[in-house]
Every structure is written in structure tokens, then in C-alpha cells.
Image (cartoon, rainbow, N blue to C red; front, side):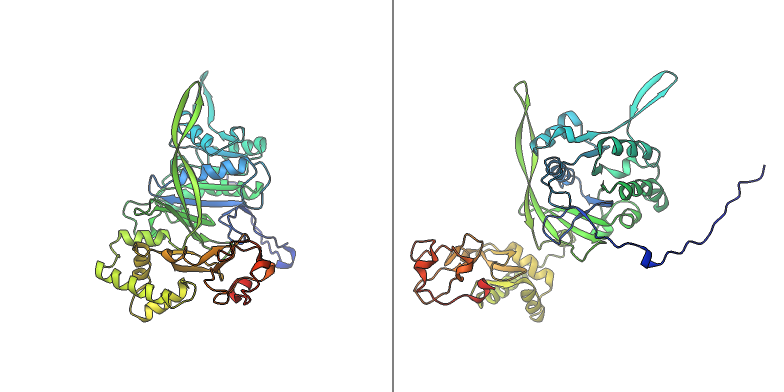
Length: 415
């Protein structure tokens, strides 16, 4: 019997026939900073114990309550979780409870097989069980699918690009068809020295996905950092931090379980790449750190607001012979005074500020505008009335009408 004939033909589609659309985001913590896209896959990686799974469960919890910031905010979303390494009854469900999850909107999924009148359950494998995933999506309307860890449920070698592709390309096609977010959790190589090179297995893991989140822990502060190393849909590659807090969960019948709960801390200018560089021994010597800290302090003290744009400090520091890593490490290790990194109260972007001075002569207005406290009536300036009320410590009032003797308007605050 002859082999089946294969035919092919050319398909040409002019761009004018393709309707453009905006990329939608499952999770967009801040406007214009999409992190987890809808309709495709995101890879999440880091060493064991970095809080990857716990953080994803926290997002699932917010989604189940309709509180996940993104294009689906306000909608009660369902999550399917495939192949977790942790037990559901002792670990997964208590973690979900601690995060405030609507447990009816999170599903564990397995395959049931029958052979010779013997019924058994097994974990799903890809691409073998893609049809079961499609059935589950149709029945639940799930908008989040978490595969944890992704290499353990693929039908092949995680180090071979073609086998990774053949396992997960059909699942990514489903994500596009049903517009859900596919989150693949992986690990770092033990000897990984960079974010891009640290991802375990074939480069296909990174190539297949449209967003790559790397996780690491700052050993000095205990804070978890995750950085977006890849974002195909925008220029934003933010870095964020969170803490894991230990909480007791009431399991009923008088029993409790102690589990980790996420406390999201917002943006940071510290990156996973910075933390990995420290592990390579790139940290400068003690004397160099002291010199870099002295340079940063001198630079900041020249400003009126006790803060300076991070980019300006780094640029000036390079001119003085310091590397960016020298300066970042010096800032991070500063103690007395502490140099903090935060969003500016006077302008856009990240600044480095002297923490000890943040509470001296500074007051926070109800609209989030920070201005220097005025020691005399005409020494400093307050925001204009369209930014009121602001707390005037000198006059002990929140009514700016009583502080019109402080007549000048601070340009940065009123901008």
C-alpha cells in the first residue's frame, strides 16, 4: 500500500486583512506594567523555596474573588492546577485558605483510566492529555492553568528543545483559543549564574513563552524578589518584591495548620540578576562599599529633598569610577544612615533617599503629596489648593486655608 499523499499550498494574507488587537493581561499590578499575559504562556522559575507556587496561589485567590488587577478585574475566575509537588490536603488547600480563596473556583485535575476492569488515577501528561485539558476548560471556564512543575508532566526530555515544544505547543494553542493564562513553573539550574541561563532544561522553555518571571530571595532582608526577564508585549520589565508570612489556618474540628501567606510589597529597583551577581562573588570589598556609600550620601545631600533620581546617582557614580553594581550593593548594605530605594514623591521614577531624613521636616498629605515641613512661615512651600488638604505641622491643621502665609508653591509638588 502506498504512503498517503501529502499536499501543500501557499497561503498569503495581506496585513490589511488582519484585525489588530490590544494584548490583554491576566495580572497587571500597575497600569501599563503587564506581567502575566492572557492567551499564552508564562514561565516562572527560581530555586526551590523561593515562594513561586505560593505567589501563584495568591494570584489565584485574588482571581477567585474578582480582585485580580488586570483586564479581568471584577470577574470571578477559575483556576486549574496540574501536578503540584505538594499534597493537596496538607499543603495546597491550607495555603489556598490562608490566601482567602473561594475554594469552589480552584480545581485539582487528574486522569482516570480503565484497563482490564481496573480503574486508576494518574497525573496528566503532555501532549497525551491535552484533550482532557480542553474538556476541563469547557466545563469550568478556567482562565488560569498552573502546571507545577512543568517538566514533571511532559512526555519527553526537558533538555531537548523539540520534545519540550511537542509537549507544550498544543497547550499554548489552547491558551490562545480560549484566552486563558498558562503558567509553567520550573526551577533554576544549580550552577546557574544568570537569569537567562539559570532556567533548567532546554532554551525552548524560554523561547516558547511570552513572559519569563525569575524568583530569588534577598538573604539580608528575607524579601522575595521576582523580575520580568522577558516581556514580548511591551517594554516594561518590572521587578517586584513580596514577603512570606507564617499564619495559622483553621481547618475545622479544632485543628489548625501553619502555612505561608503572601504579602505583596510592590515595585523595587532590585532585580534577581543583582542577587545572582552577588552569589558569583561580584560584591565589592568592604572598603569599596564604604567609598561608594560615601559618594551616594554626598550626592543625595546636595539636593533639597534628600532624594536623588537613581539614574542620576548611577551616572555620576560611573563618572567617579564606580560600577553600577558597586553603587547598588553599597546602597543595599547601607545602615546608618540607611539609603532606601522608592518611588519619588516629587517627580516620576525611582529615587534613592536618606531614610533618616524622611521623617524630619516631611509631612504626608491626604492626596499622597509629600512636602517639607516649614519651620518658618516663608522658608518652605506647600502645594496649591487643588492638592489640598495637606497636613501643616507648624499650624497643626489640615486646612490649607489657615496656612496661606506659606505662600510659595513647590513646583515639583504642584506639577
